[in-house]
Length: 304
Image (cartoon, rainbow, N blue to C red; front, side):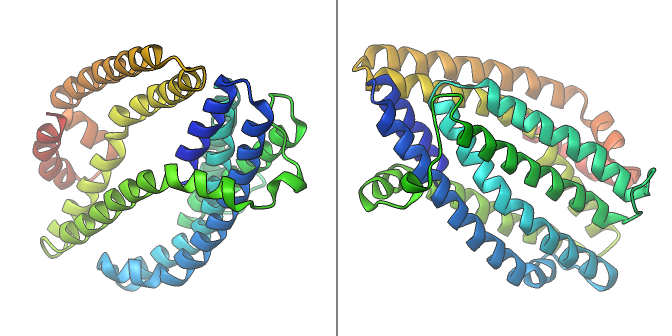
């Protein structure tokens, strides 16, 4: 909702040579992201039991799911700030700093989560909650780094309390661009969530559990097709915005076509890999042979 408008307006103003205006939009977007993050935190905390019941979680699984979601929601608030702050940096043409921020987050997440699950060294043994606790700490660190970079002003954008106060003219422009993308994302999310409910009710355990596990594995692994495309999309969005800001629509069109071709080639290559290696992928991701048995066939269809 906020990040798309941020990249578009920051890049356009940078392309037009209006750096102060680009900085003003970056400040407004961080404030909006913070407010939306708080709203998201409160909603997810309150709705966690409903989510667990919707996915047919009972007994220990219900308790684990609710606890997990209620810890996780604090990390989502931080992710809102990180995503939008990095969207502003990308709009200004800085791709390396967001890369560094997310790389640090991922490494910290992996190390801390594993350590907290099993109680490695000085870390307490938290079991399943160790996974989400490590994730939230990493996401909080990412938000702190993003704030630090933007407050420093080292990369052409600088946060200031005066500029962070919401101004309707700029806020409305951010939302006018972002709302269609927000509706797109919400539609996709609602569809996926309804689909999870459908998968959860296909059969009783243990077969139903295998269906659910196979679906979640497929959803996670298929990220190898759309995450590379997202990387090209970030570059393309910045370059198109700067070209339009410089009043060069021909270059903007060329960049869009080139980026789409690159993304398509990556997706095709990964899809072929999914089709060939469907069984090994599920065997690696789950120790339950039934999960691989029910998941590999649909995953090959997904690869197409």
